[in-house]
Each structure stands twice: as structure tokens, then as C-alpha cells.
Length: 230
Length: 230
DNA sequence: CTTACTTTGTGAATGATTTCACAAAGTACC
DNA sequence: GGTACTTTGTGAAATCATTCACAAAGTAAG
Ligand SMILES: NC(=O)c1ccc[n+]([C@@H]2O[C@H](COP(=O)([O-])OP(=O)(O)OC[C@H]3O[C@@H](n4cnc5c(N)ncnc54)[C@H](O)[C@@H]3O)[C@@H](O)[C@H]2O)c1
Ligand SMILES: NC(=O)c1ccc[n+]([C@@H]2O[C@H](COP(=O)([O-])OP(=O)(O)OC[C@H]3O[C@@H](n4cnc5c(N)ncnc54)[C@H](O)[C@@H]3O)[C@@H](O)[C@H]2O)c1
Image (cartoon, rainbow over the protein chains, first blue to last red):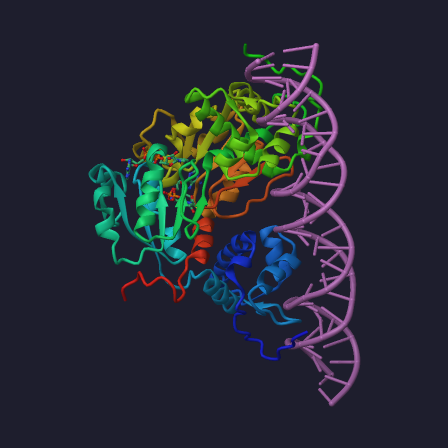
């Protein structure tokens, strides 16, 4: 096939829509573990070792990366910091991603002050709530919290990339509508309700109850195992 | 007038391990939306309508349910409350599921006071933290919070079904070890790190950053969209 | 430069999940 | 009871994802 002597192959102009979503999620896993390798001073990594650490198959790791170019060195493996740079570039977490949060309640205030997001290149610009004062007390954070009435005026011209929703179920569609109208094309929805948006808008759901419920199904699914008599 | 679909024929004793995990997750979605239908007084629902509301294919809805028996009535659809009862029985959310939370920090305190879990049949027994006093201030909740040193003694004999982890990354493995030793066989892990557990223990991960990062990939940062003013 | 060894990148094979499509089984109403 | 609909439940087909397996391409060392 197309043999490229140059190992620093530029990214293939592959249509981002053609990449399976599961690949992107794993890329994010790779990004995080590469970060920790870099921190530990590890300079090279093989697909086999990467796979072992993440509970995956090594061919899958290689195939995932192959969607975007040739980053490895046969007989050697991958250069950790080189690969990390590449992966972050693919995920666009190497540049600033500007995020707003709507609904600074119990969950929202935890999200707002989470440093893990920052570490991955996300900037929390501001929060919005119907009760910005109470929300401000809850969130021990330097991120400003505005009244939801000012949503449009505050985010206009701010280049918001992603909106995170953590509002009550019954207002989530209305909030989403407003956000979409402001030109935000990506929504991370923590509210356990499907929202309707134009096709151009990407929505991801994080459903905490769902995981808990599906775990319940597997609890003592086998035979009784006794009431732990010790 | 209301005729019960009392068909006992199928109800095959299918091995729970054979059911795809994705089916169980969708069951949880069905459970929640059926709850809202019941609340709205809707008594019957077709697979097509259920699918539409959840963004799925109607055959998939029928096939998912068919894993566990025949709950529908040809030419009619499904009785909402009957189906809901069945689904909850399958997921075991019709009986009490006893949950503990370890790490009552920013995220943990939000989880602890979340009423959505309660509504789905989960009982939050207690929380544990290295600093139970500070954690108690954070979590405005009636759930007692104990010192992590007392983990073993407090949960002994309590029949804990699921442990939720929201501790710092560097202690999660150690905490998981202790929990597993106490006989808990299901863990919901919010910490972005893979934990090693015996095969009998079910672990589910909820990785919030991962979702945010994978969303970033889909944000159109190309030449289109002249919204940004810089 | 050459030889022995390692690990990548990738077609082909396998496995899993989703969708199609339709007979069978029920409803609704006269 | 009978006829016209509707919707289920389910094999078969299509689609999507993972794993295998190996030639090609590199490394390492003398
Ligand atoms: N707390 C959790 O652990 C948890 C877990 C899973 C899902 N969720 C979901 O996340 C969402 C928020 O949960 P929570 O526990 O933080 O609830 P919460 O009531 O503590 O927070 C909701 C916040 O939204 C604000 N709000 C209400 N209407 C608004 C509007 N129109 N615009 C902007 N803000 C508005 C409220 O003032 C409040 O601060 C809910 O949909 C819930 O189902 C929460
Ligand atoms: N806050 C978020 O929004 C968010 C989002 C995604 C992931 N997470 C993950 O969730 C975890 C908790 O995040 P957080 O923001 O709540 O952090 P946090 O520091 O606010 O909370 C951690 C809590 O764990 C307690 N703790 C520390 N060591 C402990 C031990 N050995 N046993 C019991 N408790 C212990 C601490 O006292 C603290 O209360 C982290 O792993 C984080 O990566 C958090």
C-alpha cells in the first residue's frame, strides 16, 4: 500500500463523521493515560501495553489510531509525548474549549468547580441559574454565575463551544432551545431527558441513574452465595 | 373492558449473563419513560411510539423486551403500568437496592442528595469520607456520613448491594479493595481510573470528562461558522 | 552492512447489534 | 360471528465493531 517513509504523517483528511463514536471515546482514554505516562517520565509505549492498561485489545488500539494517520514506529512503539500531542490535536483538546454551565444546583456546582475539566483543556466561562445568588453560595468557585435571563446577552460573541446542562427536567428543552438559538452547537446533557435540537447540534447524554439501574440488574444475578456469614 | 394479557407461555429462564449489556441500559430508559407516562395517565403505548420518544428503532424495543418474555398485545401495544412493573422487576428496581457512597466531596455530595436515585428504588444508606465533618457540611442531606476508618464495621451485616465511588484518583484502588473485601459485589465508579477487582464484582464507570472530550471532537472549529469574533 | 528481533498497520475473519419485513395474534366494530 | 385493521414477536439480512494474523518496516547490535 501507500508506503510513507516519513514517520510524521500529517493527518489524513478523513471525514470526522465517518469515525465511529466509540473510537473517539477511546481516544479520550488514550489521551488521559498518556498524560499520566508523561507525568511519570515514561517515554515510549507499545500498543500492547497501552491496551493492557485500559483493558482493550492491542489491535484495537492500533486501529483506532490508524483512523487518523501513522503515529507509531514499527519495532519500537509510540513516543509518548508525540502520541499525546497528536491525540490531543485530534480531539481538539490542545486548544481552548469554551464551556458554559446552565443549572448550578447540586450537580452543577460540582461540575463547575471540577479541576479535571480544566486539566483537559476546557475553560468554564460562566454559569447560569434562575437563582444566581443561591447558586453562587453553593459553588465555591471563581467562575461567575449569571441570571439565566441574561443568557443571550452574556454569551453573545464569547465563542462558546459547549453548553453543559444540569437543570431540572421540566425546563431542559426550553433551556436547550435558547442555547441552540445562541449558536452553540454542542450540548452535554446531564438531565435524564431526551432533547430535540437541529441536526447540526451534537448532544451527548450522561445518565447517572441509568448506570446505577443497569448495575442493579447484575447484583446477585447468580445464585444466593449466602448472607456473608463471617 | 381492560383485558389483561395474561400469557404465561414464554418467560424462558434466560441466563442473565447472555443478555447484552446495551439491552439492560435501554431497559432502564424504558423504565423511566414508562414512569412518566404513568404519571401523565397514559395507559397504552406502542413499540413505535416508545421508540420515537427515545430515538430508537421500534423493532429494537420489541426485541429488547422479547429477551424476557412476551409483554405486548398484538394490535394494541403495551399496557403502560403492566410493562413498567415487568421492566422494574427485571431490573430489580422494584425492590430496595442498598447503596453506599465513598467520597463525599463536590461530586459525592451532589450524588448523595439526588432524589432521582430514590425515585428509582435506591436507598442511600450512608456516606464515608476521610473528613466526615467537612463532608457533612457540604452534603445537605439526612444520610449519615461516617469516617472511612469505620467502613468495615458500619457496613457489616447491612446488605449493601452497590458502592458508589467518588474519591480522589490516587486512593480509588485502595478503597475498592476494602469494599470488595466487605462482600460488596457491585461498584459504580466515578473516578476516571480503571480499578482491579475479582471477577465476581461488577464495575461500571461513569466518566464525565470523557464525554466532554468526545464532544469537543465534534465541535465544528473549521472555517465554517463565523460566530466567533476574533 | 547485515542479521535477528520487535512492533506497527491493515486486510480478512469473526462476532455483536441493529434493522427489515412479515406471519401470527390480537383489537375494534358492525 | 365476521371482516378490516393494527401491532407484536421473530427469523433473516444488513450493518457495525472487534479480533486475528502476518507482511512490511522499523530498531538494535555487531
Ligand atoms: N444531583 C445529582 O447527583 C444528579 C444525578 C443525576 C442526574 N441529575 C440531574 O441533573 C439535573 C440537576 O440536578 P440537581 O440535583 O443539581 O438539581 P438542583 O435542583 O440542585 O439544581 C438545579 C438547578 O437549576 C436551576 N434552575 C432551575 N430552572 C432553571 C432555568 N430555567 N434556567 C437555569 N437554571 C435553572 C435551579 O435554580 C437549581 O440551582 C436534574 O435534571 C437531575 O435529574 C442530578
Ligand atoms: N467534581 C466533578 O464534577 C467530577 C467530575 C468528574 C469526575 N470526578 C471525579 O470524582 C472524584 C471526586 O471528585 P470531587 O470533585 O468530588 O473531589 P473532592 O476532592 O471534592 O472529593 C473527594 C472526597 O473524597 C474524600 N476522600 C479522600 N480520600 C478518601 C479516602 N481514602 N476514603 C474516603 N474518602 C476520601 C475527600 O475528603 C473528599 O471529600 C475524583 O476522582 C474526580 O476525578 C469529579
